[in-house]
Length: 319
Image (cartoon, rainbow, N blue to C red; front, top):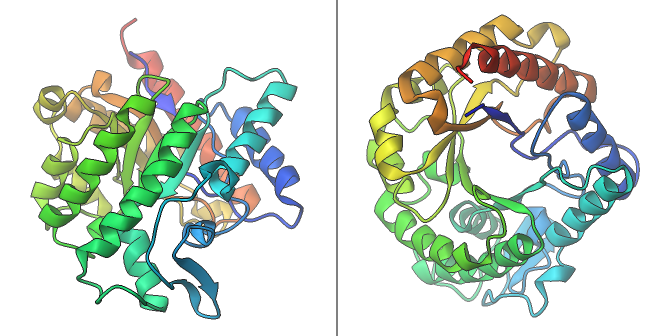
C-alpha cells in the first residue's frame, strides 16, 4: 500500500477573490502531485470561518460566544461548505472530479476556548462543559453535511496538545462527535483528526485518539518538539487500533526558500517513521501544519520536495 500525499489545509491568503484563490491553490497542489487537496482556507482563518454559527459573533477582538450555541438550520450556507463546493466545481471543470477534497473543520475544544477568550456570554466560564458539547453538536452538523457531499473531513484540534482541556474530558466530547458523523461517510478513510505539537507529556491522549470512530490520526514529527512524537508510535499501536497515521513530515514554518528542508531530509524522516509503524499503517504524508504563514512560492517548494520524498519512499516499497 503506497503512502499518499495531502496538506493540512491552509495556504497563504491570496489578494484575489475567494473563487480565484481556491483555483490557484488547487492548481499548485495538483502540479505537485498532492492526491487529496484542500481549498486552502482562503476566506478566513480557522476560527473566523465559524462566525456564522448560531451563538458565535465576530467582534473587534475576534469571534466571541454571544449566546447559546446551536446547529445551523442549514449547514450548506456556512462558508466551509460553500468553499468545498467551489473547489469541487473547479475540479469538475478541469476534468479532475475524481480528486478527493479534504475540508478542515476546527474542533470544539480549540474553537470553544479561543472564542471564549475573546468574549463569553450565556455559559458559566471556560470550564463549562456545555459550551464544548454545544459546539460539538453544531460542528457535527457541518461535518456531516460535508461528508454527505463527498468531502473528506479533518477535525483540527491544536488545543489538545496545548492542554486546553484534560484529555479524558476532551476525548469524551470528541467520541460523541465522531460516532454521530460516521453514518454520513461516503468514502473509506475520509474522517481524520489533526493534532499538531508534541504529545509526549500526555501519551494517553494518542491512545484515546486511536480509539475514536475515525480513520486517520494526523500528527507532526518535524519540529524540535514535534519529533518527540516518534517515541509514542509503534506498528502494534496502529495495527491494534485499525487506524492509520497522517504523517507530518516537514516543517511548514519556512520563511524563505533556503529554509525549506531538502527532499533528502524529508525522505529520511518518512522512512524512519515507516520503519517504526509500517508503511501500510501510513495513510498519507503532509506538512506538519498549515501553510498560511509561508509565501506562495515557499509553500509550493515545500509541497514539491514533500512529493518527491514520498515518491522515492514509495519506489522503495514492495509492490
